[in-house]
Length: 111
Image (tube, rainbow, N blue to C red):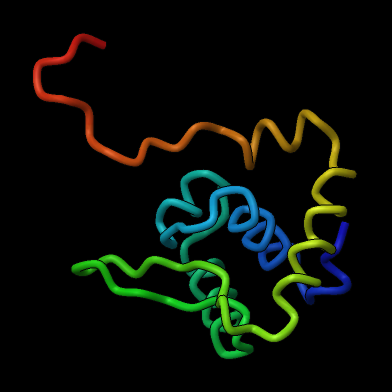
């Protein structure tokens, strides 16, 4: 939908994913979006170079989120939110609104 504006569909999916989930790491995006890790890493590097996202290290994991100092962040999020709401419900539910497990399961807890 916005791939022509952003340059490719991977950047579009990453921006929508960060809009919904606020923070994420590359491997998590790979698993959720079904895109190759290399493509996600290239797109994240491009977004980071443009100042749109920032990366924070938590141990060996690099967590990405929108850059709060990006001058057009409010406008970008408003634009993405409007575009996100126009996506078909099936696509939104399948790719972006799946519950993400933030913590490991308690030891011994039944499935």
